[in-house]
Length: 176
Ligand SMILES: CC(C)(COP(=O)(O)OP(=O)(O)OC[C@H]1O[C@@H](n2cnc3c(N)ncnc32)[C@H](O)[C@@H]1OP(=O)(O)O)[C@@H](O)C(=O)NCCC(=O)NCCS
Image (cartoon, rainbow, N blue to C red):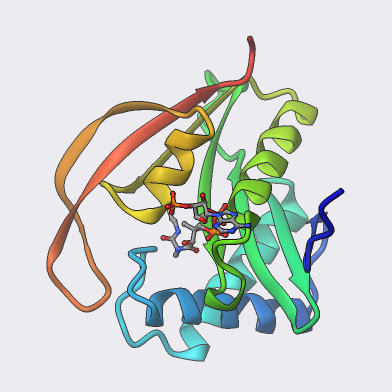
C-alpha cells in the first residue's frame, strides 16, 4: 500500500489559520506562473480577501472546499461551485485546483480531483464543468482522469506575468 505524505479532506468551515495557509498556496501557484484568475505579484491581502469570500461561500453552502495537508500545513485545494441557475441543480463547476509547488508530481492533483468528484456525487451532482489553460499541467491531469474536452477559447485570459492564453473547457459526466 502507498502511504502519501499528505491527506485530503473536505472543510465545512474555514478558520483564519486555514485562510492564511490557503492564501499561501494560492500565492505560490501565481508565483509559479499559474493562470488562476490573479495577476503577479499576488499580495497576501488580495489572496486572503479571496479566501475570506470562499469561506463565506462554504458557510452558505454555495461551495464545497476540499483541502490537502502535509507536514507543513495545507498544500493543495480544489472547489466545487454550487451557486448556479435553478435549471442546473444537477451540475457544479470545478474551480481553483491548486497544489503548492512543494507537493507536486506525487499524485496529489489526481487525489484532489477524485475527492472533488466523490464529493459532487455525494451532493447529488451528475455533471461537472471546468476550464483550464490549454495544454497546461492541469489540462493533462483532467484528460488523464477521463474529463472530456469541449473546445478551446482562444485568448481567454492573461497569464500572471501578462500575455494572453487559450482556455480549454472540459466536462465530466458522473452519472454513468
Ligand atoms: C495542475 C496541478 C494541480 C497538478 O498537481 P499535481 O499534484 O502535480 O498533480 P499530479 O501529481 O496528480 O500529476 C502531475 C504529474 O505528476 C505525475 N506523477 C504523479 N504521481 C507521481 C509520482 N509518484 N512520481 C512521479 N510522477 C508522478 C503525473 O503522471 C503527472 O505527470 P504529467 O504532468 O507529465 O502528466 C498543479 O500543477 C498546480 O497546482 N498547478 C498550478 C495551478 C493550476 O494551474 N491549477 C489549475 C487550474 S485549472
